Structure formats: C-alpha cells, structure tokens
Length: 107
Image 1 (cartoon, rainbow, N blue to C red):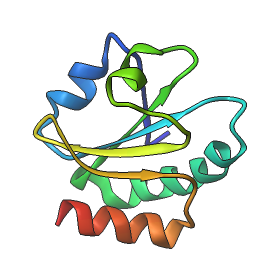
Image 2 (image 1 turned 45 degrees about the vertical axis):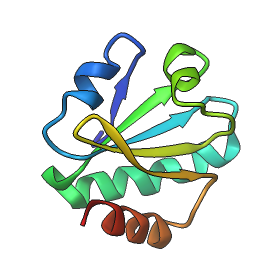
Image 3 (image 1 turned 60 degrees about the horizontal axis):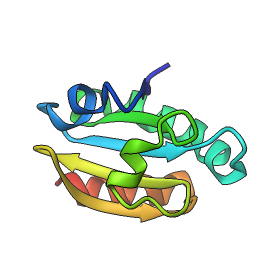
C-alpha cells in the first residue's frame, strides 16, 4: 500500500513533523464515498512518490484528531505543509479532480 494509516497518537509524527506535504484522509469503514476515493488516493500516492504523503485516519478508532481539526463530514481531506493545514476538501471527488486539487495546493 502506498498510503499510510495513522492514529491519534502517531498523527504528530506522521503529519505535523513531516518534511513533505501530507494529505490526510479522514474516513470510516461505513462510509461509501470514503471507500470510493480509496483506490484513487492509492494511485495518486504511488504516482506522486516523495512529493506528497497520503495518510488515512479512521475517525471511529481515532476521535481526538478529527475533533481537533473540526472534521464534521467524511471523507474530509486536509493537506498539511510544515504542520499547518494549507487546503481542505470535503466529499468524494473523481481522481482527476483530486490530482488537480493536490497539484494546485502543493505547487
């Protein structure tokens, strides 16, 4: 898998302290749209290599981090750079739109 799973306790290490931009996918097992974008995020992660990391956080198993970032609906995608949120998308998007949004956000 190209994407990484994280937890509330690992979030700081995987995301906030990362030297490269990180896209965090806040998701849950029961969320259809979350499952729909999963394969696209895997493909993007493989294609982007070291340009951006893609990290998934299950909101049911890790409730503290979504609360901290005011995640109200899922899927919520946040892009972090230097420990700060630089972009946000809520809801499922086609792969082409996800790629365009990522490219614009980390350019």
